[in-house]
Length: 201
Image (cartoon, rainbow, N blue to C red):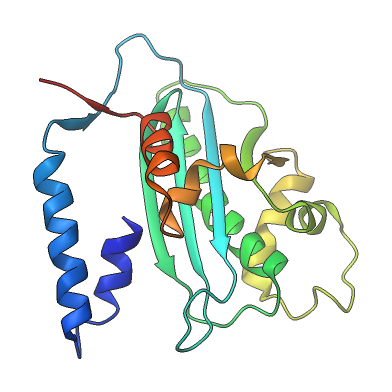
């Protein structure tokens, strides 16, 4: 997913290096045709989300890429990798903005499932940045966070209401990491399995 989004940024003026990257993606797709997302019949409806961001990952305009993944039980239901429209001033800000995006998706999923009679307590979003977690819990606006756009602070509002909670997870357990940066083969294959992409015959 990350590689596809990274290549898509150069559709307007592609170069030879971009063509090589696209060919590598196609080889990967051909070699992994037997992989599929697994959705078991007997799973629960617990919601959870994962958010990650690379700070200033684009070397052209220094914008960050957000990676998001949401799960119903063990099943991956939404995911995405998107370069942000604005430059983040800190790692904490880029992670906080990614968590706000996951929050909006989880609230939408929560509403859809509640229409079918499923109820939820506090929904976790897993983030590997402690500063972003602190910002989500700190109701005071201070100089280090006042530049963050107001629209992202609905995350803080939902944390205050007890609908959402941000939880720390170690980077190696950050399932959205696969959506924000290229990974070593071993890490990539481990995360691919963790998100429910498994092989079949």
